[in-house]
Image (cartoon, rainbow, N blue to C red):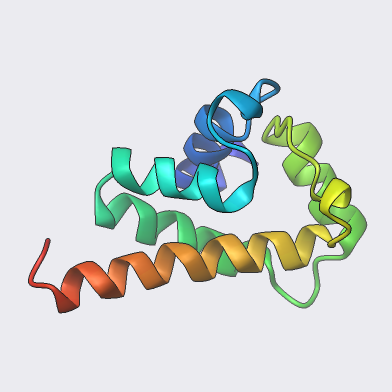
Length: 108
């Protein structure tokens, strides 16, 4: 599973680890840190992997298993009272928005 989602693994492993509070107070702050520290192409690759993972065939239980067990997320969005699917979709959207903003601004 890790080999199928290398960019998402990097995002989860480096930013949503067991001590995620070090990175920020919640999802949006952590994604902001990630975006400052990574290139646009890396962020867009993670967004693409999120899109693949959010296939309609993948259940909420499957998503929880992939994120919490297989990719090692220390962050559980249930604390924010949202599903894993909603959480991932939000992160993917933020990553894409940042990519489109940088492209619009003439960035790489």
